[in-house]
Image (cartoon, rainbow, N blue to C red):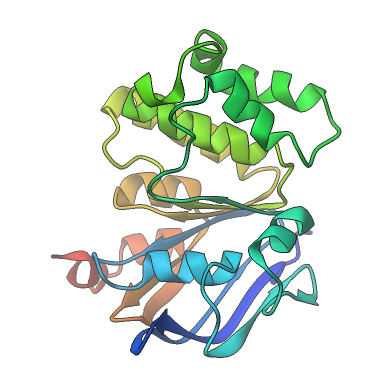
Length: 233
C-alpha cells in the first residue's frame, strides 16, 4: 500500500516579497500515483511547486517528505532526498547538447542503466543526443527536461505545465509516459489540459486565489459542477 502522505504539505503560506500568494494550503501525495494541481492563471500553482522544492521560503506551515520535515532544507538537499522538479520555463540548458543535459541529470546517480531507461521512454531524445537542446522543438525540450529530472532517481516528481506550447501528438506521448511513471513513483502535475491532468492523476486539488477550493478523487471532481467555475479565465 502506498503511503498516502508520502509528500505532506500542511497549512502552507508563501509568496514573494510583501505579496502573499498561498494561504493555508494543505495537500498530500502518495508514494505512488498522480496528483493534479489545477486552477486558473494566478491561482498559486507554480508558487506551490516552488515552495515544495524549496525555491521559496515558507511563511507558515510545513513540507514533509517521507515522514521527514524538509521545510528548512535547501533545494539541492531536497533533490538529493528524492524530490524531482521540472519547472515551467528554462528547464533545459539550451547551449548544451541533449547528451550533456542528460549527463547533468546523472551527476547524483550511480545507476548507469537509468540513461537507457529514459531513452527507452523518450526515443526521440536518443536520435538527437548530439543536437543542442535549444534547437529542439518545444515538445522535445519538455521531454528532455522530464528525462533529465528522472535521471536523478526521484521518488516524487513535480511537473509545472509539462505540455504547455506542445503539439498535440507530443502531448499524447508525454501523457502516456506520465501515466506509466505514476505507477512507480509519486507524480504531482500542474497542467492546463484538464483531461490530461485527470488521466495522470488519481486525486486533484483546485486552487483559487491561493487557497484550496476543491479537492478529491479525480473521477469525482471531473463531474463536480463547481470545477469549471474555478478554471474559467
